[in-house]
Image (cartoon, rainbow, N blue to C red; front, side, top):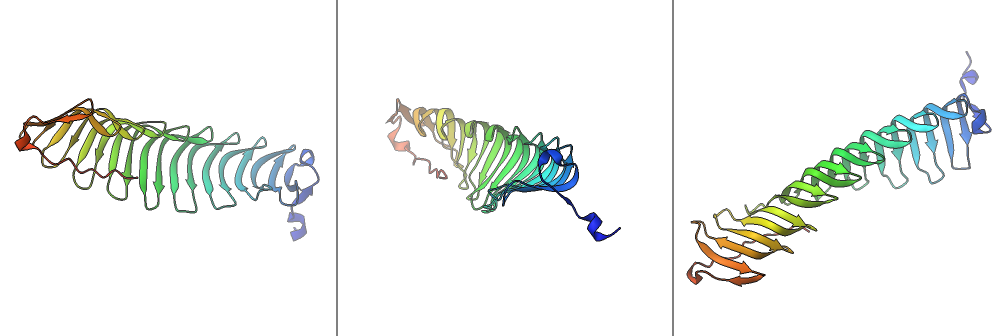
Length: 239
């Protein structure tokens, strides 16, 4: 068989395409690959007019099976597709080095996955419609960590720890301590009660021996025993 007989056919229009061949949609847009009665079916390379490129499997004219989508600015998705949408296991990467590895559904992060951002940290856990949602843990490069329950990208309740040994366990709202919580230090001193907007609101402060050394009522601090006042817990919250 001669080399010329192996050359792919150039179809004038999609509806005429069947077998191996190419359809050009514009100067910068074309599909090269397998066709079945006018529909993309099998392996092929689809280059869009904006220079986005898809390399992979098709079925009934849609991306279906394994495939790679490469964007002009360097972002890339590599994984499973279902009826034209990202669905199943896949990896999405950014030029910055950030990467998501996990499950997809309806074109968005859904299920379990790990998002890693360079010089920041990573989130490992559950996702819903592209947001952290469900059980998960977020770890920053500086050593700060929060593990708990997330809702639409923000912690709802969980346990946070800092490199200096301080810990907070309780409720959150908009990334701030809000609701019932316990803020503690390695020395044993701790503050228990209601927090609002990242501050004690109705709380009791104890020393390492369990003695009450301070109170906050409606956001105003009162002192039970002035001789046992302890320094405020030093907590550095990551930006």
